[in-house]
Length: 457
Image (tube, rainbow, N blue to C red; front, top):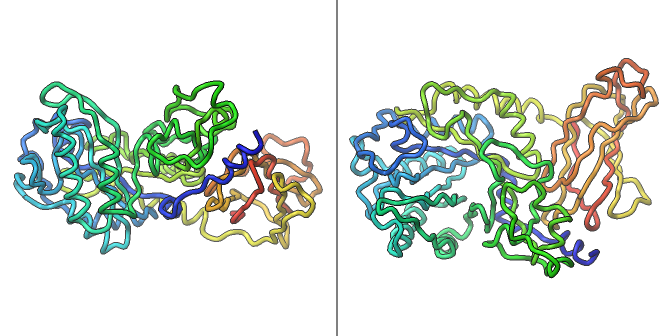
């Protein structure tokens, strides 16, 4: 088992995946006839004339996105209704037949470039409008549209696919040729990441509510992400069982108990996606989620070895709702406030500890209080390795108490520190919670621990 765990510890991300992690957060923008029909899923029969955003302003979108600290935008170029936000020459169901025939993909792309953020696309494989859907010709149709998007709108950082598969106008379902789609992306946009439930670059977290697992591993069985390239041999139990049951909603995807049965491991991190409001498309009576919910989602996405994909839907005018704009600004301000300037300390690695159980002390010049977070990062360019860790405080009064116990770390782990004085903790007599030193103790790892940073806020 030990040789296999060492292999698991050396499964590494691509440069594209490292760049993706550095973004931390990016926006989704759902915009289609659903915006005007007050639906979430259109059926593809909506007249093109219903789509009429009279005040479309993609620069307003970008300004609001940047205020929240989001570093990219992914536009729904086509949703399940088959309506195209660009004048595709392969269908009449597009903006070219709207009252205001504007190429929204182009305008969004250029606005992102002006605003200094990245631009990506979502192209729904399910098309409820196309007469080809459910036939072999549909994959040709889809590839033609994908090629338009990949070749006409500058650099694309992200191509987002779901696996929604329903009936088309002919009552049939489609067999998607994802390997063919991926080959086009690699040909025309080699630096673009691909999101799909099953890889190859980024996978679905298993829900659309912004809820992360307690342990979000990026090193996962290739049985789950079969479009990704395995980097290890089979696990020691692979011949004794199967992971055929595994799906994105499982809670222990990267744990040792599962990877031992894998035929091979791949590096495929998780995206946490949710909308700023209950629906993915704009509905007038909906309000944005609370600031606290958004912030908690940040802590358990970008702060838990994943990235946050936050949807902001434009109104029927083609603008972001002012309620959402205000919430985005509040969200960004809160993150900047909480994680603006780290608390100065002297960081030292304790000598003599096992390489898979190192300790690090963070000593403050003067005792400090009101500490909120410790942020830990592994050097994942060399692999994700930490299985568990704990953070302990030494108090000025002489007491000691564990403030946090966690599982995996990965790219970034934000650890909210509990208040040891809540409920008059019997281990500590001092009424002032002044901390002299913190100790970060890695209690289990798959190989030599390589941390990139430890910061205190």
